[in-house]
Every structure is written in structure tokens, then in C-alpha cells.
Length: 42
Image 1 (cartoon, rainbow, N blue to C red):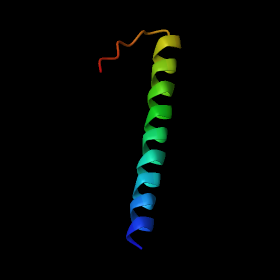
Image 2: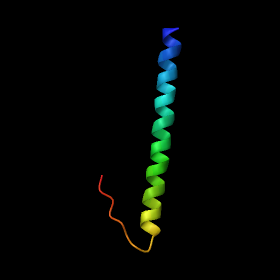
Image 3: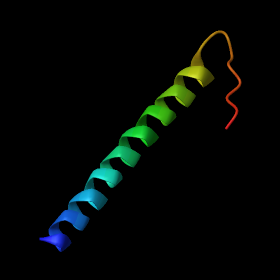
Image 4: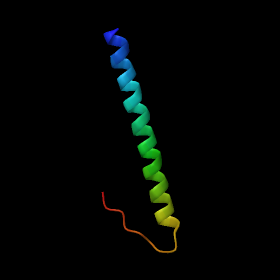
């Protein structure tokens, strides 16, 4: 039970990181190709 819960949490965190990375790359792509260049500071 504990193992399943830990693996579920890891799976959820992995999905969240993947979504954030996709959003971040999309924002970078849009900023790079927009007419008004936006400087992205990490």
C-alpha cells in the first residue's frame, strides 16, 4: 500500500513536471517568434 502510494506520488510529480516543461517551451517559442521580443529571465 505504501509502495503504491509512493509510486503514485512520483508519477503525479513526473506528469506535473512534464506539463510545466511543455508550457515553458511553448512560452519560449511564442516569445521567440512574436513581433515584440520578450526577454525571459529564469
